[in-house]
Amino acid sequence: MTQEQTNIKLMLSVIAAFQKSDLQPLFDCLSPDVVWKATAPPEFFRFGGIHRGLAGMKEYTALLFSRYSFARFEPITITAKGDEIWGLFEVEALHRTSGKYVTSDIAIHWTVKGGKIIEHQGMFDTASVLMQQGDIAVAVA
Figure 1 (tube, rainbow, N blue to C red):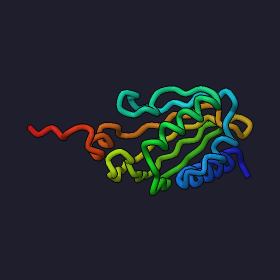
Figure 2 (spheres, rainbow, N blue to C red):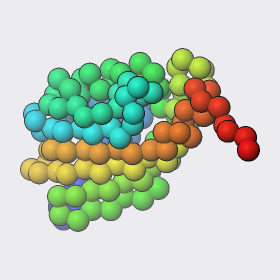
Figure 3 (cartoon, rainbow, N blue to C red):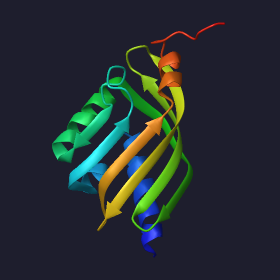
């Protein structure tokens, strides 16, 4: 199996477990000094920002799962080249505060060295999610 195939398999297995709220596969493949970037404004998404190391990841996952429960986290496409992996996922999650389900595509980029994630960046349409969960109104012209 090539490095790219191994990395794609890693992303798929971690995401499949993550969807079921099983965080152990994620924590098993994190570098102790991982840098986890959640590209979302922290004033709206408490889990947003940069989280460092395993302690930072425990805080990130606690904040994320205190607000959302994932119903779907389906891969649209995943590609890898060397240590870099990009994934695009279709996600549906229950926003616990409002009781509403929200959907979004999420782009995930990982850098992996020696089978461990050393850096993550996740991006999604934050404005759309905020509108779906009722935190901001749609502007009408």
